[in-house]
Length: 197
Image 1 (cartoon, rainbow, N blue to C red):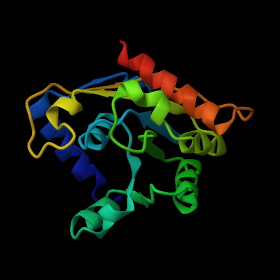
Image 2: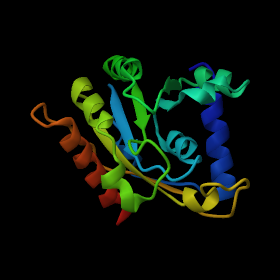
Image 3: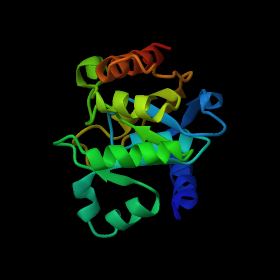
C-alpha cells in the first residue's frame, strides 16, 4: 500500500472541498486488529469516501477487469486493492481477504456486489460477506454512505454538486453458529439502520 497515504489525503481533500465530506462515528472503528467495513454501494465515489472517512488504512476488493486498464491497474495495486471475479465464487479473493484480516489489517466491502439502492440491500447482499466475517472472526463495522448517488449517479460522466456523508455504526461480531446468509442479512440490517439516522 505504498501510495495509500498520499492517495487517501488527496481523495479526502477533494471530497471535502467539492462535496463537503462529513464523517460520523469514526470512533466506532477498532483502534487495532483486523476489521471489516461493510457498506451500501450506490456510486463509484463510495470507495474513496469510505477510505477517506476511515481513521485506519483499509484494503478494497475491485472487479478483476479494472486491473487490465493501464495506469489504473497499477494504482489499484499500489493502494492495496486486490481483484475479485464477481461472476463466480472467487475462492482466491476470499482467502486473500481472510489473510488480510487475520494479519490485523482492515478490509472495506460493498456486499451488494454492484451499485444498487439501499432499498434493495436485503435482496442484493451476498453471502460472501458473512463467510469472510465468520472465518476471520473480526468485528464488522456497518457503513452508510449518503450523497454519492447524487454527486456521481450511476451512468453519469460528470460530477454534480451534493453533500456526502459517511456514517460508521457500532461494530458487530458474527457468531460461529450463524449461516453465511444469516450473517449477511444481519450486516444488511445494521447498514439499513444507519440509513434511517
